[in-house]
Length: 61
Image (cartoon, rainbow, N blue to C red; front, side):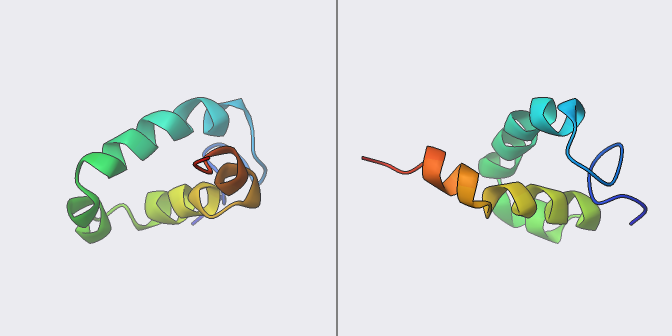
């Protein structure tokens, strides 16, 4: 993997803008996504899904 994020080695507007769409795509069929050839994209997605910020914001009350 050349970059840890979509366009560079740091979070940028592309990562923030595309995260909700990739997450929704993943939520439709997590098993397919897990078995896909998109290894780097899976790592990228889980970086955000496992982040403290995301977990705090998405916490159900």
